[in-house]
Each structure stands twice: as C-alpha cells, then as structure tokens.
Length: 228
Ligand code: ADP
Ligand code: ADP
Image (tube, rainbow, N blue to C red; front, side, top):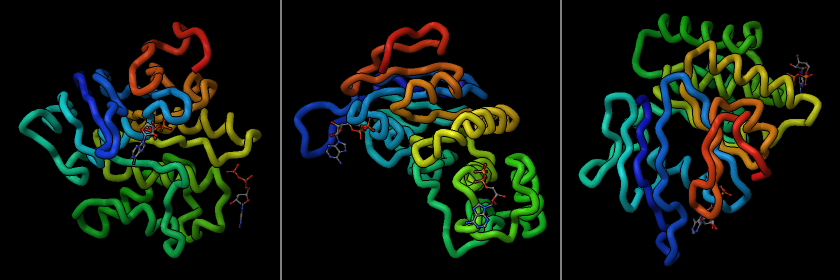
C-alpha cells in the first residue's frame, strides 16, 4: 500500500463539529483517485490535510515508507514530497514556461534542471513553448504547464484541486484525456477533488464520494451509482 490514511478527523477552530470525520483511504502506487462531493462537503479540507496545510485532530497517514502524521508525528508540507496543482494553476505571470517549471526543482546542477524541464515539457507536449509567458498560452496549455511544474520534481503524490473548473466545455474532454494520459505515463499517484461526476468518472481509477465530511461510497467508476 503506497498511501495509507486511517481515521483522519479534523475540526476548524471556530467550529464545534468535525469538518472531516474518520477519513480512511488506501491508495496503490500509480493510482488516480477522485474525491467527489458537493460544495461544502469537505473536499478542499481533505486535500489540505493531506498536503499538511492543516493539522488533523487524530488519525494516521503514511506516504510511501514515510510516516507523515500520527499522534507523535507531523511532517511539514514542504517535506512531504507532494506536488500541488491549484484551481487557477497559479503560474508566475512574470516568468517564462521554462522558469515556471524550473522553480519547483530541488537542488541539482543547472544542466540537470534544464534536462528535466525539457523532459516534462515533452511529456505534456509543450516543447517549443519554453519562452512563452502564461498570458500567451491557452487555458489548456496553462494547465499543462502547471502539471509539468508539479511533476518535474518527481513527487510521491500529486494533488489537484478542481483542475477543470476554468476550462471551456469544448476543451474539457480533450484536456481530461490528456491529463489522464500524462499522469499514467509518469506513473504518478494522484488525488484530485471535484464536484463534477463526469470529471471524476473520466479521470479516476477509483472514486471516493464525500457527504458532510464523511465517506459515503468508494469504488471504481463503473461500480458507483447515483449522483454526488
Ligand atoms: P468543499 O471543498 O467540498 O467545498 P470545504 O472543505 O471547503 O468543502 O468545507 C467543508 C466544511 O468546512 C464546510 O462546512 C465549510 O463551511 C467549512 N469550512 C471550510 N473552511 C473553513 C474555515 N476556514 N473555517 C471554518 N469552517 C470552514
Ligand atoms: P488549447 O486547445 O490548448 O486550449 P487553443 O485552441 O486555445 O489551445 O489555442 C490555440 C493556439 O493559440 C495555441 O497554440 C495557443 O498557444 C495560441 N494562443 C492562445 N491564446 C493565446 C494568446 N493570448 N497569445 C498568444 N497565443 C495564444
């Protein structure tokens, strides 16, 4: 088991009820998981807990061979080896595509860095776009740069927050397919949250349905019935 999260609970400090109750999930290496639920169901909170941006009340979380959280352990976000792709892609507007991807890379020689940037830009089919700035790219291309930046340091896990929310419907189908192909080719383990059942079904190997901070259903897309 690559990811093992057991009974993770969480309450916001100004609230008497738990926003997340006993969240339990195991994930294999290379698997793509969708967390599906209505607005306010707790999706972002779960991502923030996994990323280490919030401290759980209890439970445990192991990532690869690393204990990330339990009663005695809290690994800081930057030490977790987790890549994030935000809703708005959060590219640096004043940096070229190359510099945006370079930014996330750990300490290595300039040459090795540039080699890695070339590799990931080929993977997302953006070779030739190195010198462009984010405003000179389409929405789909910006998303692929954000993905390239998240993948470049070879993180153990990639988290994606509503990755399709800013895309036109005519682009959506192609971009969903691209995203799945890129993640699979990189053998990346990914968790993405969405309120959109179609997106979850198109991209995920397994879907975790969330309702009011609780897991409602877990299964392969073909095994799940009903709307979120
Ligand atoms: P989703 O991402 O599914 O829309 P969230 O994880 O953002 O849901 O929210 C889950 C619950 O936690 C909601 O009831 C929301 O109102 C509450 N919540 C979210 N952020 C905060 C916060 N900073 N302080 C207090 N309550 C919050
Ligand atoms: P995609 O299918 O990836 O979203 P589009 O059909 O939106 O691509 O864009 C087609 C082409 O137009 C792309 O090569 C893109 O780089 C270019 N393009 C889109 N927006 C701009 C812009 N604001 N400035 C320069 N080129 C752009």
